View 1 (cartoon, rainbow, N blue to C red):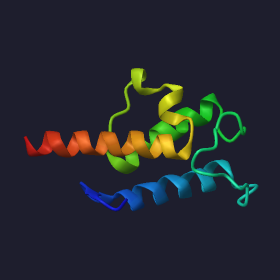
View 2: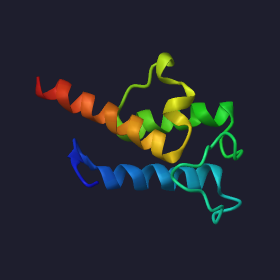
View 3: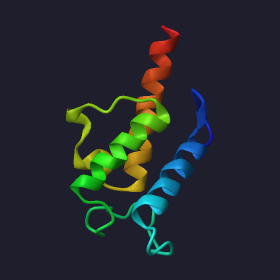
View 4: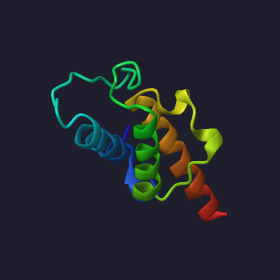
Length: 99
């Protein structure tokens, strides 16, 4: 899991997302035992406003575009889902830059 996509490796993307969630949403309980597959909504980590803050972070940090149709539960359900979504956007951007 360490393929390079644009300026990032997959591992870096995973770490950046995890660190952001820890700092912005779990600041009161750093050792929340959150796994990659845990539902961020069900666990009360992110609410609707938090989702928009997260989207803004992803757009700025990774220079990707998240359009309104992208903002669905499947893309933001868990750390793993956010990572997969972000990597897909990075791959699309890298492909567009090469064409």
